[in-house]
Length: 289
Image 1 (cartoon, rainbow, N blue to C red):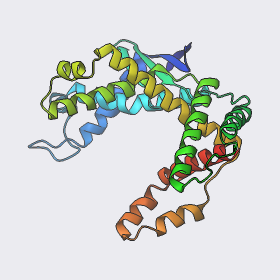
Image 2: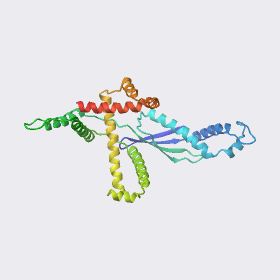
Image 3: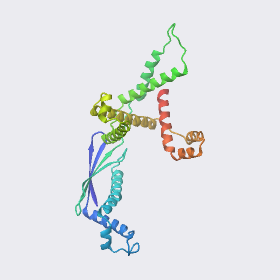
């Protein structure tokens, strides 16, 4: 038996405070202990025949509680998410507030929810940007009109960058701090590892970049937030405009892989390839507006 309270936090973040009764904990403890007891093998006893009093000396409580948490919490989490119609975008952050023996357990679960995005008049925003680009391309007497493929690609990329910047600026999409901080910590760990490999200290690296650690974190936070925001905006556009990827499109990609092992690996990760292809089709769609 458990109860919970849901609190809405800023930026699409939800806090769930769960209380699990001590009776529920004790019942699950005994259940898990019995399973471990049946699988216990010690000298003088066959598997499944170890008496409880001897098993208690050979099975650590920590082991039982770890398995209890791993079994019980995902079940509770999934039940609450389903009941409250929560749409998580990443794994939750779980904190044990109180987990003492013979007491009710208290657990805090922080969930980053997928934001609902209002695309507003995104097509008009893009059309205005494209109109400004066309003004720059108006032919004037004496103006050279020859444009090679490389220059065309540069102009196309410049236009796309302006479109994406405009979408970021004009479309609201609050990303949970849970996602940003998790990604930030991982980036910093990776950076510090790289700095260590080249024989520098963090202080020396920051000095070479003329940055403080706080400035670096601020820079990373903005990059992370913009990256997630843009990804979600593009997904919302793809959903709204019914941009999909056909199996035939994926098979065409896979057939170009000559190595059979590479092809099988790609097919096993077809979702990844489908997401990349859908994103590219969405970008092409924005350019075509």
